Length: 383
Image (cartoon, rainbow, N blue to C red):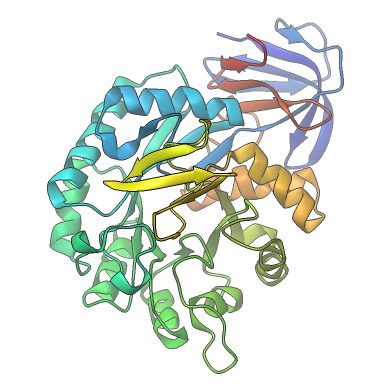
């Protein structure tokens, strides 16, 4: 277990500090300028930032959450640390009930193992089946069902009560009831894969919805006589907006429009990546459907976008490039905002004493030199 990091530039909530981090029992024990500590000393210009939290990711490196395999989750976990992700929500997708249940039970079993080989699984993002078939994206239409509290309870039980976010089309029959139930039970209800209009979006917010699933994608956009879910997300700061900043799912100027309307505190960077991430172009699978990956685009045979192959560090770099913002602001959207959203900011999301030592060490080009999860080095460039 790592005892400390010396001679580094630290990104803290108070700004940049030059100094050292002492680590004990996987947590940040002290931040100081004293050199009298044990640990790795860096003799080059490096920046230490809090680990990224990906709240919406399906797969990577040939594995997918829907594989219902311990090995697949472990493969994802050890792969994601190479892009700076230190924790994530294992994200399911629309499938037949037994398949979703198997995936949820598998996540629960994996979490019981407390595997420390890579990024930590924080729980589940249940994306589907409670969505609108007219905004299904790459979700199989034949398994979409109306939102149901009874069905959700079954899924939550299968997950070991680890579902943290559920994507819901509020306009579907039972949508508002499920949103209200989620609010009452401290589960994030996220508006997504939806044809809701603006008034339906407002009602969803009033019932307790506090998130938008991959903003702009698979939802009603802005028209000057009906501003839809996208317009609603711009106007209502109670909604935290996920966004895929790969330059493919959302035009860079649309990302800028979102940023200028919602501000850095109300946006969360996600990858929504599928199993082809990190692999070569070719044919893959998502929810039993063929996916074709070419030039960083993953699409079904009908050209529908089918998740991404985006890495979190690239989402951070793209945000800096597209928006002209600082690293500090990009990290806020990749680390701090998801931690606050998931109600784990007391443990993760910033470099502060008492929090988990989930850290990413970057060089001057913002390439990853090292990733640390709970005080353990889980990735080191060139090793």
